[in-house]
Image 1: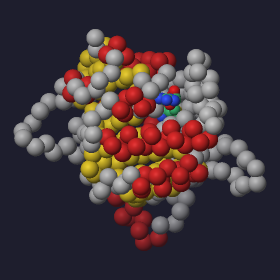
Image 2 (image 1 turned 60 degrees about the vertical axis):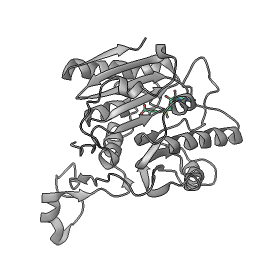
Image 3 (image 1 turned 180 degrees about the vertical axis):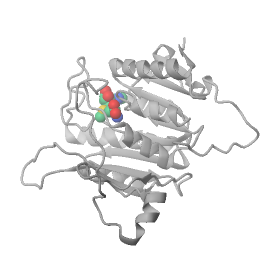
Image 4 (image 1 turned 90 degrees about the vertical axis):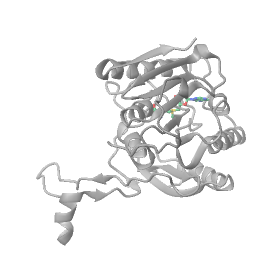
Length: 299
Ligand SMILES: C[S@@+](CC[C@H](N)C(=O)[O-])C[C@H]1O[C@@H](n2cnc3c(N)ncnc32)[C@H](O)[C@@H]1O
């Protein structure tokens, strides 16, 4: 994926490692920084409100939020109740995360929130109150969930894209038309548009039903849940810019950091759980070995 370059005022400046950290006032022993693919990033073990609170106003091009859904998942052995709070407490915590995320978003920047539709609805309304505008509600198809109570089978999660004002960057991804895996013919009839579609691809819609959740143990980078690479690639393709800043404070296994680095974005990713940060560092370390680069703990 090739992103446009960030336009700088006042001449060029290299994206040196300390730039990501310069304005973060956090205990440095939890920082790990690296330079890879011509960009720089940081992995920090921290609580979401701590890391966002330590970040300057209006610096992020993308804030990506994949918070715990409060469904009782065990992210941490030391805090098994991390993902099981009273609903009111969870709501005010999530809204505080949105307050801080909105504060650090640049004009034109995009805030993505991945959540259950009911929480997307509540958070969406709250984000409008913070002066952000809904750009997209993306339905991400997720199979293998469970029917709960008297409802239809829930088959999608919501990926909200809010922006601060008019989006600074918006690239529309193109897809190849889907073919039947048995006969290799197209699954839809595109009529007279087929030639154009074959040449230029299909415009990505706001229903993403082609992403496979990372469920198999041999493909997962940690025991907890993990979003597919393609989802991050799309988010970064849509709203990213080379040299811009990607912030992901619920980074889990760090796929967002890897995709941001591959696209030449600076990144600031964090997670409360040290074992998740270790996985992210390890994956970035592998990328550094393959592509060149360096890493260091800040002291
Ligand atoms: C849904 S998972 C994110 C998965 C991630 N997007 C991925 O693809 O690997 C939520 C993450 O938030 C972390 N987390 C939970 N509470 C947190 C908090 N208060 N501050 C920071 N991270 C937290 C969990 O450890 C978990 O890794």
